[in-house]
Amino acid sequence: MEGLERQKEIHPKLAKVVAALFESKDYPVEVQQSAVESFTDNLYKILQHSMDISVTTEKLDEYKEIDPNDAIAQIRYITNLLDNYEAYTLLNYYLVKVIKAYVEDATDQQRAAALKILQEQELKAVDVDEVDNRYEQLVDSSSQISHNHSMDTTNSSTLDEKEKDNIGKKLIVKLAESVDNKSIGTFEAQFVSKQIIKKLKQISTKDEMRLYIEELNSKWPLFEDILALVGQKQESEQKEKQEMQQVRSEIASQVNKT
Image (tube, rainbow, N blue to C red; front, side, top):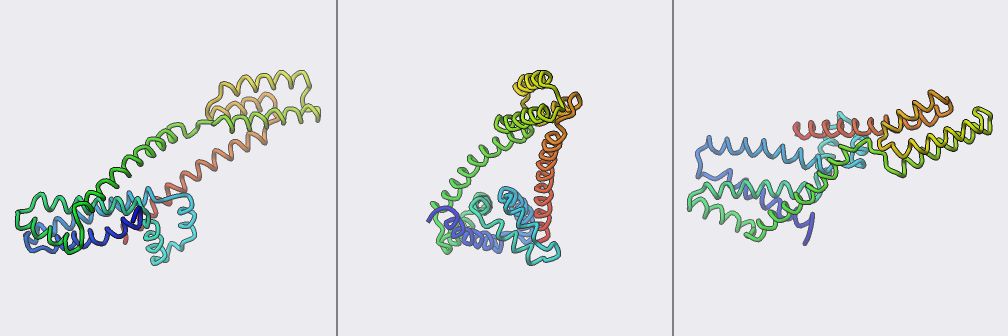
């Protein structure tokens, strides 16, 4: 059994072990209370992080359809959102860390009791090692994704060659149409086209492209529609990022309430 199903199989067993350890009579009540509070605080952090890596554009669209006043729908959405391999991997790893911390600070008698609880849940050392290994694999994968995301964020305004070529073609076509309708002379149009081709080779970001079209249009007011199109696309991308961040925050808030 691999992947998500395997993680879901182990999860309730680990949860029962942690619950049994917290209910143990081996520690003073105040120590148990402190441990439970610390566990709960960290669990919320894990859930929020799990949720963050679980959110996709498709999931965000689903969330927008939920009635904000329907608590049951909100809880159902969060539960379904966290039903994935990454979330279970993080949660299982956290439970294993809690169990290991208990055992490391325990007396021989307490360790024996903890081992008995693990055996009752049919958990072996190899199962614990498997959780650790899956977490390490996830971290390695997430580190690469995080690095790529960081690069994407740093270069969020980078203009790829395909998009640049499309805008360049639109500018040249518009210039040709303007010659046909006598909005600009042939000689002047040839001059402008050469300037466009030369400038496009120097442009590398969306902001540079927008500023250049603004400059171009101020000299030859032929490109208003292309300028508007580029501006609208940038605004749409920015709005989408803001909406995604807002929904992430709203979902995180719902997790804290549950």
